[in-house]
Figure (cartoon, rainbow, N blue to C red):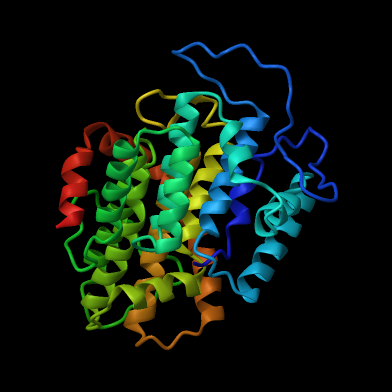
Length: 369
């Protein structure tokens, strides 16, 4: 499983105003024993720094659960952690190293989550991480079963949740993209785009924009199922762009393309979760949905921008016969992501309206085919 941006997901999640978390020698628990806090009221469970650390620990453990991290991935994560630690004034490298070197225990992280809503959130996040790059492996299955038991979740409900995520992870990539109820006019082509013969470029721009609005809208919804649908929609978008230029793509090729431009599947899901922590979106956890309520603009803007830039890079890559190298693709994606942030504010009303009217069950059923 790729991990090339996992640590980026923890930006700001640890309280920068608190002293950095240091690792003493030997075994230890990063979730110190202390006097019990007053129980949160049923209608308003709140997160504290111990909860945040526990949730991030579980998310990182899920990212590493299948044991397929190579030296290149670990080094990339280390460089990102080092850079972010310097920028944010917090010690993100230590948390990453604690998980990678198994200096933290899943039992301790689970025990630190003292509200049912937080335990449900932890499990749904772990399921999303494990399934982000496809149907989870045997090692990931064992991890999720152990986590569910430690969190005290009902086994039947936990299995049902995993099955639901698996169905989305296995969604065919060659299906149609859901149209918006009323398609907005496509934006002008990206600044550096060149006119090329072939498919209708305006129609491709409209398809990319519609997918971006939909993914931005999904991040405004409280259900974890909504976030799980974002990556299948992105892979389907790449397939449709490639097909428009005469390329029949499979899931493996699309996954490689996403990783090449810097959109790792597992790391993207963890990053989405981390950005919610950054924006304070998990301060209040909704009881039945297992997700959070807050200023959701951060997650929505991230998903809109990532999807739009991804679609535009795919359009140029396949229209040019797949001749761009990885460095050029990464540079192009970074520039287009910046451009997409400006577009997101322009289309915010359509994103909000799409979220208000979206039938999530219908959408996921359509994705599953």
